[in-house]
Image (cartoon, rainbow, N blue to C red):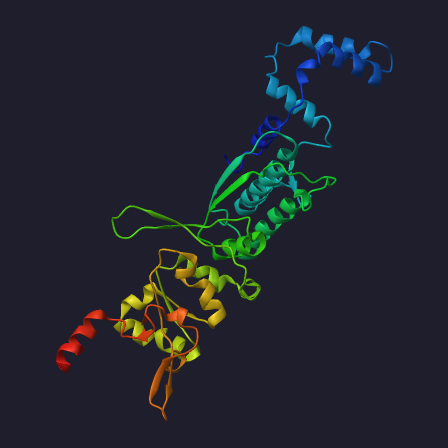
Length: 335
């Protein structure tokens, strides 16, 4: 679709209807208008006859007739945004309003029709202020809920017919964040990744969360990690200061490819790629006292805390080094 050709919207509107306009003849329309708007009997009919005697026109197609029948029942056909002609506004505002209008129309009009449209939108965030991007998702969710049945019994204006399938391709954390927070179990995130010259890998993410504490705290910072190349999870501000130090980044340029994220157990449990099943390599840095507990009196070393968060370090209930080759080297030296 051309996001600046608003005439296409009329074409879409005319395609989603089950009305049989073929039953209406031109003579019936002419007679109706002649009877209702002529000051004298036959004036309108004579007026139209004089026009057709002078000009030649190509007959309307069926779809064009449908569009005209729909338009004549509306108060106008020029699209506006906040009272202003949409064509006089910026490209970002224009495309945003166009996409929003299309989606709202398809959701509302398809409720009573035997049609399930699929809509693919590539980067809806282009040209939009981040807050307007969030508002875009919120508006769709409001329209979605307006027609959604919530009980088995009949509800006025609510329908159980399938909704249109909306597919967004995006690199905007705020779009992803708002989608996860608002649509809950009615959304599915697909993660596309590609390493070097290998083929693109598509992962179906676990993007539905039951932990309300996580959903309430889920922000752009967490959504940004879905687009990471590498993630380093740390505990707090001290580690953040170390790994984000510009002097260290000059020595180790690869640090610029890594997203450093400070998290507590609630956030880490839900946002780490092991849970989401995203193809994103990550590492967890934790203080050793958060992983093990040492009983000095009885000389007992045991695992402590939520060991599932550091399962790469733990095998069969015992703590080991992350690097297997280092273990072999240490064992050989002992012997």
